[in-house]
Image 1: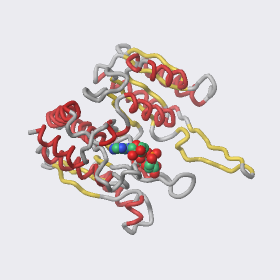
Image 2: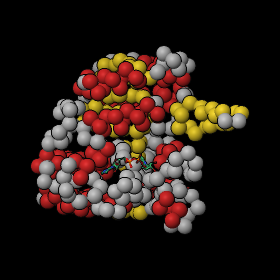
Image 3: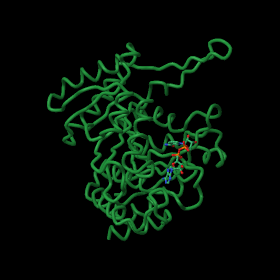
Image 4: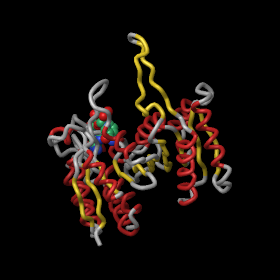
Length: 334
Ligand code: NAI
C-alpha cells in the first residue's frame, strides 16, 4: 500500500525544492502516492480566490500528511499567511525544528544539537489587531492554559522518546507577567510529570545571548509562537543557515513537513535553491510515517553529500544547482 501524501509546492523556490525532494524520495523506494494541491500566490494564480483553498485543507485532513514548500505572504496588507491558516485549520499546534551541526559545513560551532518546540496556534499570531483610535493599533497576544499545557507536554514527550536531557522554557514572564507567566507556569506543571527530563527556564533576551555564545548548553527549547519564530531562524544560523534546517508542524490528527526558510524571491526560478532543508524535513516525514530505515538512509546520504562538499549550492559556498544536489543525494543513496 502506498503512503498517500499531499504535496504543496507553494511559491518562489518552493516548486524547485519540492521537485528535487520528490525525486530523492522516489529513490528511497518508499511507495508514495502524491496528491498535489496549491497554496499561496500559486493558488491565486491557479484561479482560486483564496491563498489557502478549501480543497487543500480537505486533502491534508484526508491524508493526514503533507510535504510543503514555502508560500508568499504580503507584508503589512493583503491576504493572511496561508501557513498560519493551515496550522490553525489542522490544529498543528507544535512546530518542531531539530537544529544539528552538519559535518563539513563550517560554522562557529560544530556540535550544536538542539530542538526548538514552538507553540503554533496562538500568541501574537492569533491575528487579533484593532485600531482603537486613529493610528493607534493594539495587537493582542493570546495565551491559554490548554494550548500552553499541550505544547509543553509534546516537548516533554519528545524529550522522553528521544532521550533528551533537558527542556528549557523560554519566556518574558518578568514583563508579561500574566501571559508569559501562564505559559511558564504550565511548563513547570508539565515538567513535574517528567522527572527523568531536566527542566529550567530562560528569559528570551538572555536566551538569545546564551545561544550565540554557547548553543551547546541547550537541548530542547520550548516557547510561544513569536519567540519560536525568531529563535528558530537564529538557531538555523548556528548550523549553516535557512537552507539546511528542517521543520515539522504536528497536531494530534495531521502533520505538515516544511523547511524553515521562505520563498527566496531573489533566487527563485534560477535552479539555485538549496533543497537540503526540505529534504531533511522529508527525513522527519519518513520517520513520522514509520519508514524508519528509509529515513535513516536519506539522512546519511544527505550528510555524506554535504560533508563531501562537491555538490554544494551557492548559499553554502558551492556552485551546484538544486538538481545537481538532488542527483548527488540519489547517487549517495544507492
Ligand atoms: P527567505 O527565507 O525567503 O529568504 C531569506 C534569504 O535566505 C534570501 O537571501 C534567500 O535567498 C535565502 N534562502 C532562503 N532559503 C534558501 C534556500 N533554500 N537556498 C538558498 N538560499 C535560501 O525569507 P524572506 O525573504 O524574509 O521571505 C520571503 C517570502 O517568504 C515572504 O513572502 C515570506 O512571507 C515567505 N516565508 C514563507 C515561509 C513559509 O511558507 N514557511 C517561511 C518564511 C517566509
